[in-house]
Image 1: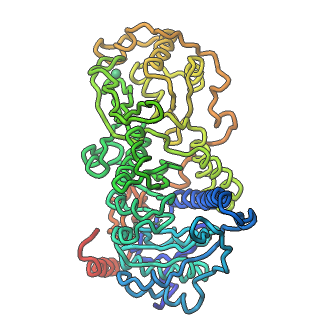
Image 2: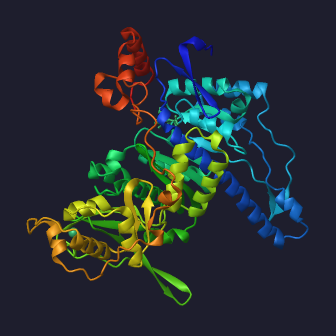
Image 3: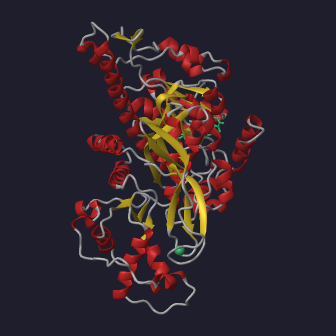
Length: 579
Ligand SMILES: C[S@@+](CC[C@H](N)C(=O)[O-])C[C@H]1O[C@@H](n2cnc3c(N)ncnc32)[C@H](O)[C@@H]1O
Ligand SMILES: [Zn+2]
C-alpha cells in the first residue's frame, strides 16, 4: 500500500493523527471530539475501577485461600496483551496487511512473566482491557484510545466499508509503533463479529450513523461480565418524538415531545439496551449518560444474573404527559413486596393518573417505557471529573466536557426528567420568576431541586406537580395575568386556590452551583455549523448549506466534477447495496 501524502490532509486530535483524503470518502466529524474526549475519560475511569475491583476480589479470595501474601495480591494487576495472531488470521477479515507487518516488525505481546496469584482453582491475572470499536471509519477513535489511554489492551477496529478499512490501516501505520502494536483493523460486519465473539470484549464502542438499534442485540452479547458498552445515537429527531412510531419500531418506546425530550431520549436508549441485555439474562448499570451537541451517548456496564434481572421492571416506567399543561407523571412497570426474608415481584399499581389531568382537566399522552432508575453513577462522575481536571491539557475539548460533567455531577440522581420554568409560565401566560426565586420556593416547601445538563433552563425536582402548580399560583397572585379564555389550561389551573402557601424568600441552596462558583456550564459551540455530518461518500449539494455551512459546500461544489463522479462510481462498485 503506497500512500502519496500530498493527496491527504493531516488531521490531529489528541495524540492521534489521521490522513484525510481530499475526496472525503471516509467519515470524519471534528465536532465529535467532545464525544471522543468523554469516552477517553470514561475509559480511564473504567480501567481504574476494574483494577480496584480485581484487587478487591482477590483479597476477598486470598483471605480464604492460605499462603497468599498481601503483596502478591496487590501486584496482581499485570499488563499483558493477548496474542493477536488468532484474531488477525480470522477468515472473514481478509488480508490484514497492517497487522501482518506489525507482527514481523514488532512483537505484539508486551507481557512480562506475570505475577501469578492463586484464585480458587487456577491462576488469575488481570489482562489489559480489550476494546472493540465496532464502527470505526477512519480509526481516529481507536487510535486515540490506543495512544492516550494508559493500560489499555488491544483495540479492534471494524468497518464494513472497504475504503474506511483501508483508511484505518493507513492511519494505524501513520501513528507509529504504539498504534501498530495495539490497533488492528478488520473489514467485517460489526453485528457478525460481535455475535461470533460473545463475552470477549471488555469494552464495546458503538458510534453509528443515526441509530444504534440494529447493533444492540449483538453488542450486549459481546461484552464480558462487568464490561462497558459505550453507545451513541444521533437520530435525535426520532428519539425526541418527531416520528413516535419510528422510535417505537427501533427502540420499543414511545417518545413524548416535552421540553425534557433529550433526557427522555437517553432513557429510551437505556431501556432499549436493557431489554436486549435481558434476553441473555443480563442487565445494565449506567455509569454516565450524556446528551450533547446533536446526539446522546450512554456508558453502561453489563452483568449477567438471572436473579438481578428480575429487578428490571422496577427500573422502567411509562410517562403520562398532559396535553394541556405538560404536567408529567411516571408509571412504574413493576413493584416488589417484601415478605419475611423473600421478595415478590409484581406488576406496578396503576394508573397513577386519572383520565383527566388533576391540574387542568385535559387528557394524557402516554410515552415510554423509559429507564427511570439513575442514568449516572455519581461516584463515577465525580472521579471522571476530577481525573479530567487533573489532565486538562490531554483533552482537546476540555472546556466543553468539564462543563458538561460538572453539570451532571450536580443533577439530582433519582429524579427522572425535568420541568421547564418557561413552559410553566407559558401555560399560565404569566411573567417568569427568576430561577433562584422558583428554586427557593421549592426548597422552602421541603423539596429538592437541581439543574440538568441537557437544558440550561430545565429544573429537576422531586416536588409533585400539584406543589409546583401551587407555587406558580402563589406567584401569579403577586404577578397577575390578563384574563384568558375559560377553556385554556392556564385558566383552569389558576381557578383553583393553592393549598400550599409558597415562600419565595431566598433559600441558601437556591443558587445553582454554577452561579455560586461562577463557572460556565453551557458553552456556545466553538464555531458555526457544529453539528452532524453527512454519511461518508454522500454527495454534498447546495441543499446541505444549512447543515455544513457555505464554505464547506462551496468548497466541495467547486471540486472537479469528474473526480467526484469517479469516486462515486468506485463506491458503488465496491458496495452495490448501500447500508
Ligand atoms: C459515524 S461513522 C463512525 C465514526 C467513528 N467512530 C469516529 O469516531 O470517527 C460510522 C461507520 O460505521 C460503518 N458501518 C456502518 N454499518 C456497519 C456495519 N454493519 N458493520 C461495520 N461497520 C459499519 C460505516 O461504514 C461508517 O464508517
Ligand atoms: Zn394538565
